[in-house]
Length: 209
Image (cartoon, rainbow, N blue to C red; front, side, top):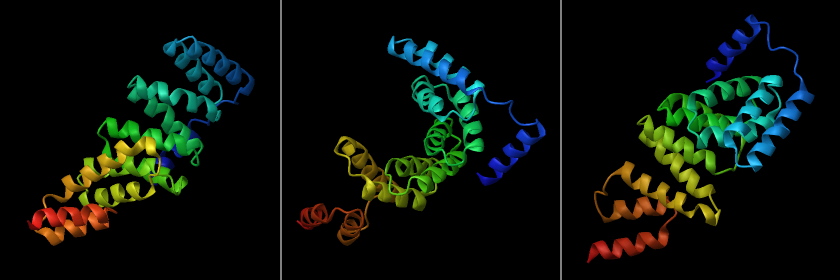
């Protein structure tokens, strides 16, 4: 990932960089995009947000508004192109790294997704969501121990009741990746390590019958 960033910076330098940003025009275009979004015209909104970014590649608010439209519309190639530029120019832009990880994962570019999610987890210490994405990317890359660790980290950090389904998905993924337990003690150990002590003892009692 660092090598990719360095290479992109070299390309920008060879191209002479980006023309002087036009922040007033970019803001006006972003406001037009907001009007289209409010009216339900998602394509019109995204077009304005893209133009705003083209006018000022460092107007991060425009990326924030475009990201959900790119993802919902499954515009992976376009999203990757803009988000790669955003992260090269603004390495601390955590939202762009997270979205870029998602895009790469949807494109099954798992190694690239891992790198993007790692940047996101480093920039958002203590945030749960990037760890779920990182775990899924590790799983896609068949890096089982790393995936299990990331899913467990996600479960430890996630405390939002609205995301309870994701915690259940993470537990199911851990069980799937580890495979069936060899014996009762192995099952107990796995559940305890995953923070399910009460469930562990219940399962052990059931298996011992």
